[in-house]
Length: 188
Image 1 (spheres, rainbow, N blue to C red):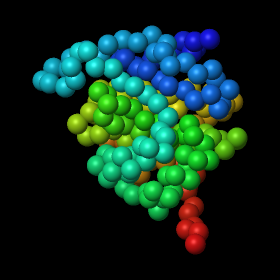
Image 2 (image 1 turned 180 degrees about the horizontal axis):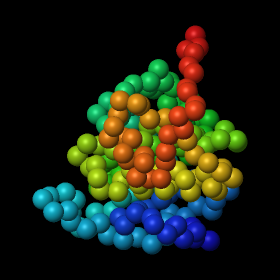
Image 3 (image 1 turned 90 degrees about the vertical axis):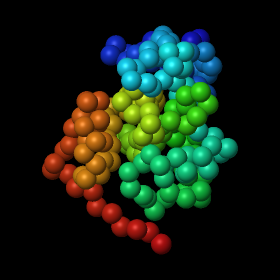
């Protein structure tokens, strides 16, 4: 059985999604939905024959992900260490989603689902690859994961000072809920 068709309004870049079988969605190593080659961007950018590959991270990817976040992610987290990310991937092997282009890591998102709510963290795209649909492709993969798991609404943590991210989230259809505030207590 092949993957289900992409939603209308999906990004117009070549996307391959590799899905582990653990969420009950059949494994399909072929392109997920329609694959469209990426067009050249005026003034440089990607070669028109490049594809974007979306896949779940494995233990072998964690050092690269941590290094990537130092370049591409805004802010740091108490969990930005090997032990924290290993625990994340061990608990839910599909939660950390990667985007690769020509074998290089170009984007990440953590799509966490606790059985009740869908949470998005660490949407990060390498600065040299921004504004090419990579963030949208990662969000589409995360949202597809949530729908397959029975999720009904996704929320994202976005730094107040990160205006670029706020614009990206808004463009993806997300909006702030001003009546809510995040309360945090470090443990240990």
